[in-house]
Amino acid sequence: MVFRSFVAAGLLLTTGLLAVQADANEQTVVRVNTFPTARSLPFFAGLAKGVFAKHGLKVEVVYTENSRQQREGLAAGKTDVVHSALDNAIAMIEVAKRDVVIVAGGDSGTNEFYVQPEIKSFADMRGRILVVDAPDTAYALLAKKILAQHGLKAGVDYTVKPIGRGSMRLQALAESKENAGGVLNLPYSLQAEKLGLRSLGRMVDLLGPYQAGGAFVMRPWALANGETLERYLAAYVESLRWALDPANKSEAVALLVAQLKLPQDVAERSLALIADPSFGFAPDAKLNPEGFRNMLVLRTEVEGGTVTPERYLDLGYYERALARLSR
Image (cartoon, rainbow, N blue to C red):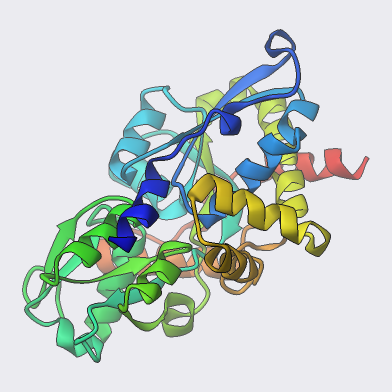
């Protein structure tokens, strides 16, 4: 079936992705954990074009099946930097009591609520199953919020079913109509459309600006490796700039096709959408203060807690990284 070729991309971690262009003995290893989506393009570009190597780094990218494994890996020291929904960082700080700090923004998530074709409205999710990554963080909270606005309460009016990352949620929706809906991001949302699933809307249109993706680390690691972190963030921003430069469109699309095993048209549409700052990447992966505050407000509404943005952030590393690029 067609969805299997889409899902297979989520399992891919190619040798080329880990390749570097300089002697490993001269480079500092940085272990990065993320999800395989269209927003992985800066990693594809940075490695393929030698940007990380130019900054003296050997970046090792590992994909995770779900955010729980991602958070546990960071806490255990298996990962240095995580690029993921920043709500996961808040959960590590507030729930797991880990000394985590957010060091950069990223994107608005490219999140869209997809459902089975027979579902015409959010109200039709009553009595049905919502598939999520983890039930208490990030995009699951977006889904719970929008369903609550339509009078539906999790665990009462519908069932929340943890599945894992976007490719796994797409597979769950494709394989069984019992799985009624879920939040998907690029390229899985476009693949869901091809499979005949119905979109009930983009989350930023339904709920307003939202700081989805970003970079976070354990604070002790940042304090001990500040210069490395600055070089890493500089290289990431440089890679993002290259990926979104219209002059590099053909190469960027080719990277999405090769690394995620996407059809050409899906790769092209994905690139166009992630380049939209209201839906995809912010320029230079800059944190959106309004979107970040909205994310915190949403978390407090659904999970409780307080809205204190400053206690979660240390953007000094990011600011110094930008200064490096301007030299």
